[in-house]
Length: 272
Image 1: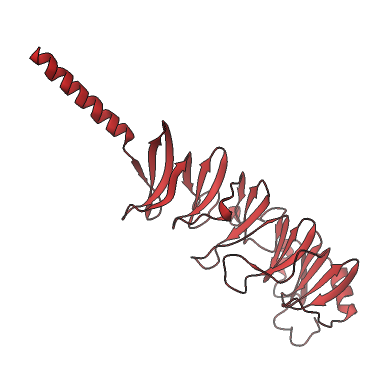
Image 2: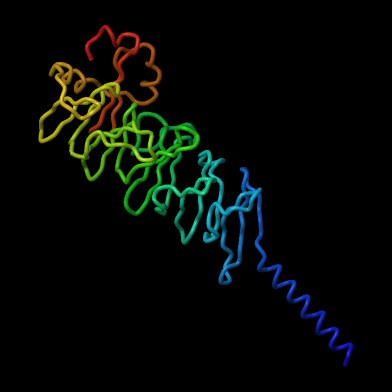
């Protein structure tokens, strides 16, 4: 009888230890200064992320999985992708959630294979794109610490300032306030826009063209300049980059938006 009690006691202890072990958090290293943490919550393994040193929770333990976006195929520094119920969520390793917490179903990186971004962006690889239920969200890390994000939008042309299309209309954005979100120079009200070296813009509204400056105020520009820019053929990205040092003017376009590059060495001597 005494032997039986001892055996039962040992068995219960082993079972208790096993149960405790099953419910203990599991830690896995990342390629940064943090660790993935996995907890069993309501019978389901849930992923989060903590500081490797202090154990501070950066990403709440509520996701089906988490992976680093540092490597292939995205090559996005400082970013982790958390997955839940088939959607992805963008988190920085400092525990900041991007895109207002929107979940997205696909991600296109500006650095992926060093190729053109995709059909919704032009002007060089800069923005990462996340496809959400509300449209495409754009985001990138220009300073190493502060992310810039905006959207949803349908198309983007970058050239110093940003030409962005939303609900079929174009607007002009600029990060002049160094904030998380870009500041609008204009609302989304134009049928077409031409950015001239990011210094001023030709805008088309109700069938009429006019010129505005970086504050959205009217400026006087010659109609002949507009005619020249409208008649210029748009280059593809490869030709645009190849002619950087040899062309006085270069033009790239996406849909109804264009960017005119003016030679820096000749800009003081030519009308633009």
